[in-house]
Length: 433
Image (tube, rainbow, N blue to C red; front, side, top):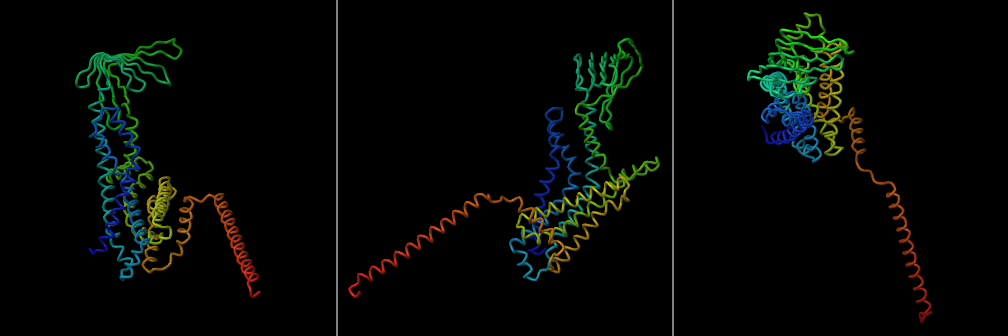
């Protein structure tokens, strides 16, 4: 690798990792607050909280890696152009495509990294996260039920357990169950056992040899129902948040499991448009890295007019436009308004045409006639956020300057008049006169 390529690649990597860290932390902020609350309020160690962070990060990296590559490409070449380094490089006879080689290397590396994240890291993180939650539910749920104490940790339930063994077996159980849409119940049982359900993140209480005491809404009828076995579902404290987190990640299934789900739903006669969109997205998203790399460098060179901060404006505009279009077309595909494959690949096809155009123009060193309007409005937006001078103070300043100029001209006129009078007085008083 030539020295110039190493120099450009070093600048690209510096901006890339800074953008990657910042974007990932911004998207991860909500989960960080939740995991911190779990560590403080629930029996979860710091190590387990750190494992949660590792398991949740891969889906975020699938989005932040392509975005960070675009930012790095735009900002790096914008700085090279603003410092006139790009012109010095071209003066040495180096073409634009020759200078693009470091971008190609980084684009290829991020493409491979995104493929690994989507097909390996995300399914692994999802499965590992579910397994860890299962361990927490299975091994620690019984801590929330204390013997010979009324426990109200579970929603709409009050427990009283006379005795509890190490294998989650309970004896002499009293349960008061309240419900907003029906009468309350009192459940008594001789024996019970806690069994965890890792799929739904809930605990099931299996009761044996007991009775259910109920009274109707009017308070006129009292019923006692005896049972040999009774199953009661218990929501794990903080379980709804954990369940929501798991359900969100269930959409990030592995390629094999996603294909199996599509085949199963087709056999059942159910719609599979949403699953097909997710499947095609796994292949379309990595190619975004290649396209962002080729589109970013020419945009960075052209954005020099807006200064070094213009690269950030251009990057934000392109990212927002691309992801808004991607969400729009994917929603259309999920609702069968267009074929799922076309819906997923439309943003990449438009981005490919755009990247090809700007790279061709940059290689031929032709003016960006089509993009002039875009850069003009970006420049206008950037200037709109700059501090404008106070108009009243500007008017006062102009007035003061006019007064000073008038006073200066008056002083010069008086000085000139005095000089003329002095000359005439000297001429009159002269002996020759």
